[in-house]
Length: 509
Image 1 (tube, helix red, strand yellow):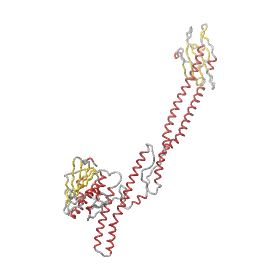
Image 2 (cartoon, helix red, strand yellow):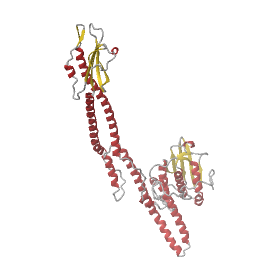
Image 3 (cartoon, helix red, strand yellow):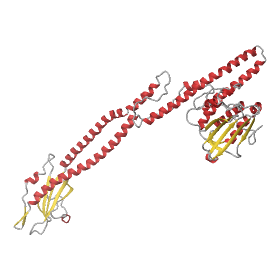
């Protein structure tokens, strides 16, 4: 009958000796239940990948683009500096000629006289043969020079302080240097102006700009020539890593050992370590698949042989053979169930996601599933647990597997009329689940061997089994992070699970 607090419609789908086997097409490790393992192993589906720019091209663009930007900025700054240097240099020469002419302006007998020095005009000669103009006036009266040369406002000039400005004369741009002088016994100021066209300045500026441009082009070109082999040298460790990975594909048998790449740059070490971690997980999963296949073939050979013998006897008309066939089929079903449960408990890779699990509810479900076995074995079963929910962070299916196998062992190896007790306690953040029986227990020498695969201990004589039950318990407990302890209680065996953290139901989803 159901235990108090349980539901007649208890959840189905957990692996157990009495419950139906759920359909799991594949497990996380790659085990195939439906017979499609060969298809999974033989066909590799390549994920779709779009075309991406080559890494070498990316690096080259990432290095050259800033370099070209800096070259353009330097070119603009250099052009501005060249224009300023050309202007200052030619203004200094133009100002020197202005000073030489202004020094010759004198007063003789109350009249302003001058003696234009040829050297002053010689200073302004250049290969571009710029035109030179001058004008000397006393107040508004022209003394000598070009009368239509642009005259300044006298009020804008400071005495003996040369001023430079741009103007246009005879449809040509010119640069004018002008100065205001005050002479003794002359009431009006004397204005001296010297001007030249700008062809020489422009030609010098162009030559300097061409030299600057050629220098930048040469610098960028040399950088491009040097960067490409430098990138090849920098990417050589990546090519070595690719070669090592590609070499694994040419071997007859898969090599899942860590990559032998030698020293790698700091940027590639995380990639190599992640790949090694993936290989280790794949190796573990592959080893688990091989182990599962070997275990299954080894353990299923005997019940299949028995089944074949009984089928042959049934064909000869032996009426007892049908009962033996049914028993062999039951043993084979139990063996397959336990093998699949062990495979699930030993799945390699990331631990299963934790969820809120009510320990009392799982224990009640296990007892309800084992009621028929309890009655058939002639033992009693008792649940000792506080009222209400006892929630832990765990994985319900694996916890069900653990309790189901522990209760199954406690029933099988108990004495006639014995008691199986499931005790649940929550104390100071630690939840413990203990399964105890009144059977003969285990020899102390066998306690260290508990949980080994296909090991039949001394107390197993006369009982059917494959030696997988406690192996499933130990593997599943390790996966969900539970501590497990086997202890003789004389009489009987007590198995205790401890969960370090118990959390309230609102901490889980």
